[in-house]
Amino acid sequence: MAENRGVKLTPRQWANLAFDPAQAAGKKEVIYKDTVTRGLELRLSPTSRAWRYRYRYASQEARRITIGDANLIGYDAAKKQADSYNLELDHGRDPSLIDYRPKTASTLRHVVDHYMTKLSDETTTKDNVARVVKRLLTDHGDRPLINLDSRLIHGWLNQTMWRAAIASDLQKISSRKMASSLYRHVNGGVEVRACGLTSALVRYMTSAFNRAMSPISGLDMPPGYKNPFSNMLSELTWMKDYLPDSYARSWGSEEWKDIMAGLDACYLAARIKDTLDHRSGPSPTGLRCLHLIMLTGTRPEEIQSLRWDQLEPCSTVIGGTTFKVARIVKDRHKTWGKTGRPRQIIVAKLGMKVLEDQKNWLHANGLSASPWVFPTPGGKRTRKDGSPAKPYLADVKDYAKAVSERCQRNLDLQTYNFRSAYINFALDSLGMNWLEVVAENVGHVNSSTTLRYYQRNRLDKLIEGAVKADHAFAEMIGSGRR
Image: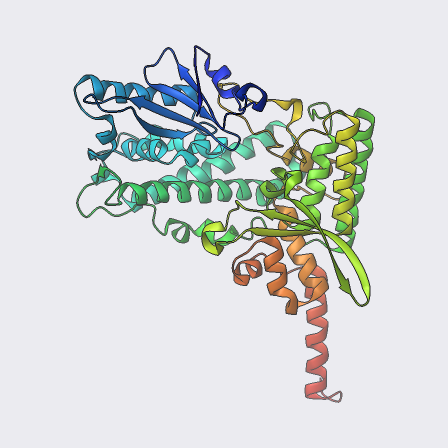
């Protein structure tokens, strides 16, 4: 049986509530009832936090409707949903039927609002994408759907996402008098950000319209309406020119040495400061997170969200020598829907040294009880708006920037660069016969995706190819002919 408790708390206090085995006194779950909003309750268990609505209809037994995951939905949103259920109940209608009465979608704003309400996972949209969605709603949110087509969306993306991004960054560069870095910044910075945000926005809006147009969505769309975001990425010329290669990097040996020297300089500064907070300089925990991303070629989020219980020691014999490695097993990952199996990440000798250093550092700083390998700075559990914050390191871009500043070369390192650089280094070192293995290591379902990130235009490779082709021509035509 669950234990029920009536409480009156602020949104921030609701967000901080967690299951405490000591207070649960052997109960499998604890339920906190909101004394302000009728029927609203928060169910806590060792593995989940969920908002629910409890009610009685027509003298029947008590029923419950799950509103959503409390890690994704804040108190204000849950209260608003509970109020709508109470309104139905006050008018003599069963609240459980509220979601099954189709609503008419007449504007773009209706589609976006419906998607945000129904799909709880999307309420944690990254801040940059959320700002772009708000900009889209500001410009076209009240436009009737019958007047919203792919031609209009295409023009808006060209005008807002590409030209506005370049104009903004050129203005910043001009104001800072950074003319020497203009070419590098425009061709390495603006294009990456514009392409990345546009790709994320198009995926988000495509899903929103696909869900709204589903027969079971509970939303009535205009008859014969087509998704205006379908195949939009292939219609944008600048997207085809810069994606996915906008993230792809292939560094030579000297560049790698420069980057590692910059990382070592950051480690030295971090040892002097020795704190989780990165605002006064690079933090050891953030640098090790970035270092492990570099050594494994994983998606940044896979390492940032790493827990100690996801690490498993294992070993293998190669050429008569036993090698000890660590295996990371991720049950929840990006390609789960395609593979249907856990994601495995192998951490070899260099990566294990990084993990060992991080474990010792956490122990020395009294953080050994943390389940996260890279806990969030300051242990913050909520954002400024009261919504739940990630308990692990949410971003490492500041650490990539810190490494860039300590490199001798003019490198503008982005977090995702290390993933593509790993792919290029692994394929160049192992050979193309190892393509399938490298694809599996980095988490690609198809090796064709890995090949798209493989840069064939490295200077040393271009020179080698030209020399070999020239030698072949010389043998073919004979040494006596010119």
